[in-house]
Image 1 (cartoon, rainbow, N blue to C red):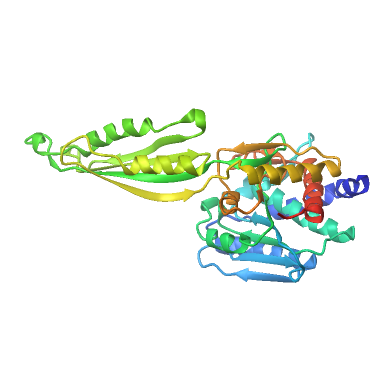
Image 2: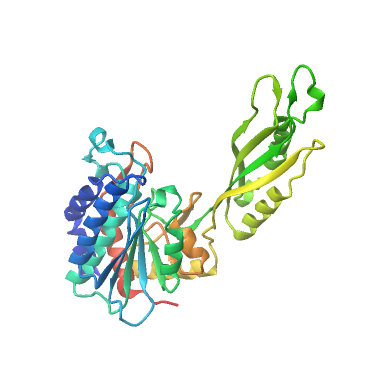
Length: 382
């Protein structure tokens, strides 16, 4: 146990160097060429770590995905690391905020915590297993995507296909600030509520119009009653739009609705409530448009068993695994909703996702690498 932990602790500076190299690739989701540059680097890394195959999954609008495999012909269900290389930061951000290391042991840089720190952990864990001579005879995969920051709109079908037969998916999103894994995440569904009224001159014949904005205002009050905050369900009208001119009774109006929930049951309840909206004003029409949805990562019996095994493995290398959750989603929502054992938040501790103070706590890097390596070595699939 002590030798295993000590090995990864000795890799701390190498991990800082690796993370710095990754952050120095600027990878905004929408710049395919920039993202593909890091993709080429990642291919080299996987091949240098002895991957038996590295398969590109070409994409037109975002960076190409990669699926790297070790021991692909070995028996058993694969254990899969799930990573994304895109960030929210535009080209030129590094010139304004280059990588810096503070005396208190924090590494700052765009994309450091989300999720280039997690990628650093994966590469180090795999290298450690090989150098320690304990890489298990089991299939180990890494699926690398490039569109997570825009909702994984292209990668979700790929994630579902690749993850379907896995014994465990290890999502390398950052840990909580306290270093806990994330064993639940809220689901997300977004909608637009469209109201159609009838235009009329606001001065000459307002009574002949059907005011879509007035109708929408009443619908917003009704939608607000769908909140169930004590049980983790939020229903928020976040943007509204309507009208065509200052002297015209508005014929159209719409509202953007953001919904979050902890369970599939709550997701269905909210969707059904929005779909059943009826007009207050005679003659008005209401339609519901679903824009995007992602199922919750539920803290169910499977998750309880999965985390319990993680705790046991952590204890075997002298660590204490803790759990928490998040109101935001990740690709872990996708795999967990499929019924595939999933653990999220296996990346480093830190703070500042999508913010100017984005940083990684350096001491958490070797600790997480040791845990991930031990899980690959010791995991028992259901």
